[in-house]
Length: 175
Figure 1 (cartoon, rainbow, N blue to C red):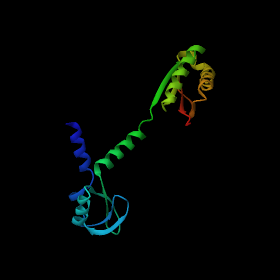
Figure 2 (cartoon, rainbow, N blue to C red):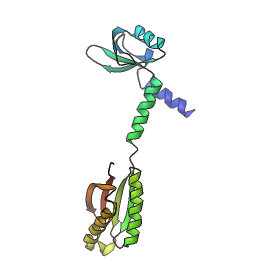
Figure 3 (cartoon, rainbow, N blue to C red):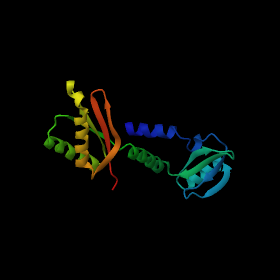
Figure 4 (cartoon, rainbow, N blue to C red):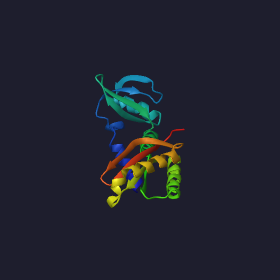
């Protein structure tokens, strides 16, 4: 039921077929060929004869521009493109300055796995109490971590210290 509702909502958000508020339109066919100016009724008839829809694209000085296309396929491709853009995720790895080399290697291996999935990684080093006096140890951990992952990632942001947190963002290298 929910899918049918969302499809109806998407059709409402576009001017499609009889919902186009103009009487005269410039028409582009499914092969991107300009068919010229015609009445809305004639354009809808041309689209229906091809078992396609007439979609309002934009308003220009000459009039409304409409395109003949399969609205279902067009809408599916548009939704798929927006999902692809939003697929990049950010993962977080937290460590403290007294982490052992082996534990840091385990964290680096996890980060490498994330980079292979095209995810970004936030390395967050938390300082507790008087540890904040040893900021240099935090920067050393960042350097060690980068040495372990440099084949798979690069800095997106340089290490930044805010209060008791040293934060750095790594992004995967495009191969």
